Image (cartoon, rainbow, N blue to C red; front, side):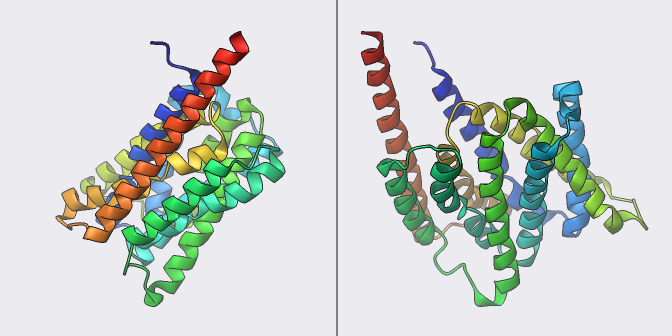
Length: 287
């Protein structure tokens, strides 16, 4: 059985989402503040990209800088939000991104506004509402607002990375990490010391949860649309509480389990439908 480029893209975004989903647990476990954590994590992430892609990372121009800044916004704002509010609040509000992508991608990238994408977003967000029932608290307003801004950056990055030249995608992530290092340097200026437990967790986040995850993401985004990537990436907020359960023993509520099943089922059905359409379209084109 031959695997199409599109199917490879779907598999890659699933892997990226699973790696991203481990972030909330470690952000909570690490005792560093948001800016210290972001500084050290981005050092490891930048080095990972340098090892994987060598000279390719050093391209710099306006699209690279803009997408790098959106990337930096995603990472820093999400860490701050996770420190200020619950991990569930942070991940839920960040994943308002598909709404913005759904609206803006057809305008900016001239893609079709497909009915199946609109329906998938509506159903998935209904599932996420169930998943995080009782978690959004007014007392966490500041953290919630920052998480929402992270979602806006995520949407802008998805669209920007799709719109830009393919050779600019990897440099955008590398320079985004460099921007984070520069922006967060003040937080460690007076004391670079970090204990072994924190450094191991930060190294994992930088190398795997960010570095390798975004390397896989750049592979996937060449092969699938931005809205499709945003929808499939909803695996991240579904898996996030599962890692929390194993790390903390915190059991998801029945609403969370139901919401997760709705999201996963929606993504699976959408993927099957679109893949069948692509298969039959390819058959017709070959006739």
